[in-house]
Image (tube, helix red, strand yellow):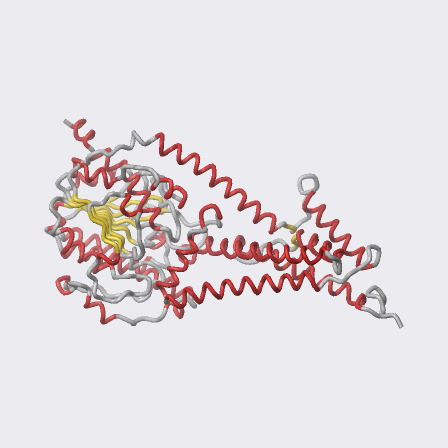
Length: 550
């Protein structure tokens, strides 16, 4: 007796409608999940038009030769889309912007090193392997779903009609969006993601052309200018990691941070220093501090790695060259640089101290290679005191970098810091980052405490060495706002800037741009950018300004 047909009532056809619905629901939910990062959860839409097209096409091809290749292609595309969705979520979560494949692929290595610094090398590799396995398993699961779940149906059977209607409805929705009104709560998440990345890639190409032209146009105008008005003055710029205006104006953080700003005022006054504060916009959120450093030093808005790479491909004068032309000994202290950093030489510092160049004998504290108090101490004792002429120094103060644990106390007696061995007493203290980060409220609490520590150490340095700072211009500035987990949605791009000097005339360029007395910036929002600071200094203290004043 002949086996029953797959289309007969006794065969699997009786399960056609449930299987069709199951396939459609799984595809629909999976596609809508691509929008989770954009909406911080499932958005208002309920139907992915691509799910209709895929369900209809797969149903009509089930059991035929082409379904294998369609399923294989679908699995590959779905895996790529998932990887893009995860990258988009990571970019929005950490950098407060969408994924841009034209710029962000290099950040994969940065993520690896962040895990390595906060946990261990083994954990970084384990996370990488698990991520690769998860994507592979996802691809296999999608292939099996697309290859085997649909029921083979004749064109005019009940299941066949359903498949054709779904395919037709999906195609009309996809192809007729410009001609017909889109039904409510429908979306094309896969196409939207591809279109978004195509837009960003094209925009990146245009950006490359426009920024290259800008570099060429301004090359002569931005030649180095001797800052002779500061020729006898030590100029120190301390970049405080993740110190954004949210730390000052968000009521969740003010109880920890504002008292340290008040302490900064008190210590500045006791040291005979004048203090003004303001706000400037940083080019980045949540990370990529090197772009903020490049923005301030170059006087150009470096808000992407593309611009950074293009900048480094030119021989461009920066603030480092301006100070060198005025007779300063230029130095950069970069304790977080643990890998080869050839671009550091591009700036032309007389002396560049990376992590391995510090004689630090204490322990690292997760990602933080050495605490800020040691960085300040080493700068004072081994850099500033030995410099043959006034210094221009850029310090990266990294204790307020995530994961914001542990929070060290400030040592009152700076003479005992030495090579940092004293910090061994806090090795292994505090909870593990993996435990802390399970509670976002406590993460925010630790963020505030770490920023407060960096501010307290900086003000303690000013108090500890008052004579050395009598002839100095000290600029404390945040490098960028922290990640959205700290700031919340739609934060200001602003970072606080505190400028200190015993000579009130040196503060005038900042007062003229809205900076006010004290350590509290006037507002979280501003029209000024970090790129403006070089121009302010050149205008006020450059050789041309000095000649005009005669």
